[in-house]
Length: 179
Image (cartoon, rainbow, N blue to C red; front, side, top):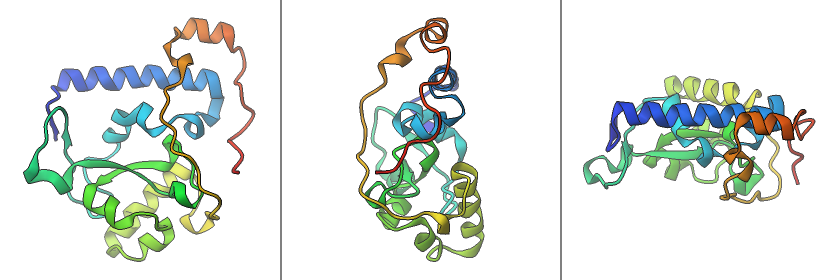
């Protein structure tokens, strides 16, 4: 449920994000999910699930107003591999969950978090992780803290035609290297 956003406005926001995704593909090729920041595609993230993949509670979006009754069911963006443990600040490492689960998971490694949630939820959460990150949670190797990035990419303001002229090939040849 989305509070404060009409279905037409939601569709417009999702369409705008699809335009951004095409621009990310021009800039970064098949590795774009590694380079797109979660907040740049938040409506696309919001649309991936109508429920928290950790506890199955229905999720809500509050826009322009606070809803005290639904506080725990408001969507949060969780970094499945925590930034503090070396996870990427990327679209592919982000998933929408309820506020309660996001706060409970905190900085835990995803594999450790999975052990704490009920079995049916665990299966779904693991599948979401594997789908987005392309590997099992146990394969993640913690590293140094990654920064939370907040600046929007200036290139996204250009028309796709201009981007294709400026960047005939992707500007990267693979995913980012971990520090």
